[in-house]
Length: 269
Image 1 (cartoon, rainbow, N blue to C red):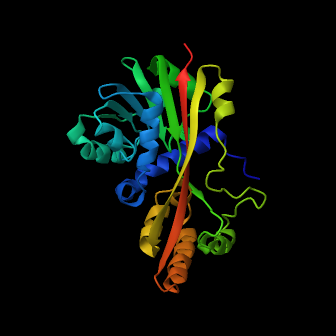
Image 2 (image 1 turned 90 degrees about the vertical axis):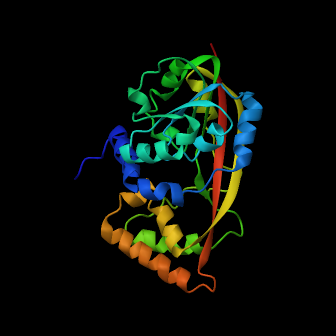
Image 3 (image 1 turned 90 degrees about the horizontal axis):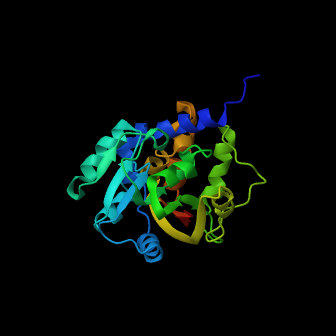
């Protein structure tokens, strides 16, 4: 029997896959809703000129809406190909993009907010809150959220139908796992408060929808760690079925719903 891969090793292995999708990431990943950023700034009362540190910026999807508002920003990204694209995308804003993992970076000074967009879960869970605390000014903010697939009642049936193909290629989901619904996602309040370093200020859920043809949806899947890490035969079988099934629809398209839980916490000391 092959021994189970340690959690930390698996996390680092999957996190490293994103750099292989650097050219796709900016085009295929959706924008985060403007309301999320507006709410974040309403709660934190941060103002242009405040210093922010972003953990795992990828190509700058979440960086750009804050950079254009005049914040001074340092962004950490371990993937060299992603770093190169982020530097090009953010060149007009004076954003510093550092090729580093959060766990290996030493802040040169204290900042007003540490934030992560769909990247916080890749940071070592034993260290991430301590690392954020060490980078923040007294009463500074930590904010993080992730963009995940949610299934609304009455949503596109495509995802239920295509699950049989995932099952066939050995990528089945836990049948007992709850269906993720918009506005009903679990949050990390207990984890944040358990460490004793931060107090939760606000938690808010957001949802939005994107529309795809077969090729744009396959591009999106090719930016997800689980799909990047698949064997070629698995992707060939899955993507062939996606093309075939969407080709049978009159418009050839699907609707995908997204959900995000924005967590905002304040450093206690």
